[in-house]
Amino acid sequence: MRILTAFSAVVAALAAGAATVAIARLHLRSRRPNTACWVVSLSLFTLASSALAAGSFAGWSGPLFRLYYLTGGVLTVPWMALGAAWLFGPKRIARAGTFLTLALTFFATGVAAAARVRVAGSGPLPEMSTVLAGAGLARALAVVANAGGTPLAIWLLLRAARTLRRKHVMPSRVWGASTVSAGIGVAAVGGVLAALGGVVFLGPALALGGVLMLVGFALWDRKRALRAVSSGEAA
Image (cartoon, rainbow, N blue to C red; front, top):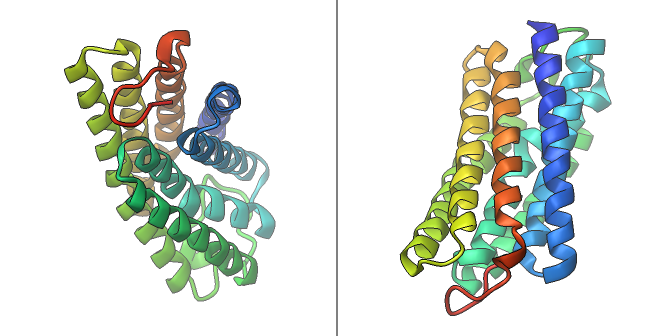
């Protein structure tokens, strides 16, 4: 199980890293807040998957578990949801979401830095309660970030896909938004199963989720994609 998790996490990190590069290139052309948020989210996903691979293969340390908890356990999903909010949500809500996401980022970083971590040794992923001393706040942050961010990100991306399909424009982005939302959902299911004791499912779920997000963002970043589709412009 340890090798399976490590190998799957490497696949997830490679896929997320490639997706980060694709969206970073798009951001350099568009300079839009949604692509900036997605670059942050995908970078965090890459770091989390890399930490999971290293911890599963070579053994967990305090800094490594803090990195995984902060990037994968708390921050990846809110930044992805924020990008979706900037794309097709009301701008007033997106601005408020930016403030909340930045506040969450700083607060969660402080929680992770201050937490006392017991080195867990080898294994696919240690249980948070056995690693973090006083893990209640840390667990609550992870639950709130993922329970709130995951359905919001999926809903906004599917809403974007529906809007594009109804307007009969950018068919690649219809498939792209739908595929990214599927990738987010698969990765989230893996996290839930891991929290319930099915740690063996985490690595493969992250790998499949990462590949789906790579495919989705590759479809999103088609050359003909920088056109207005609503009252605002999609990018």
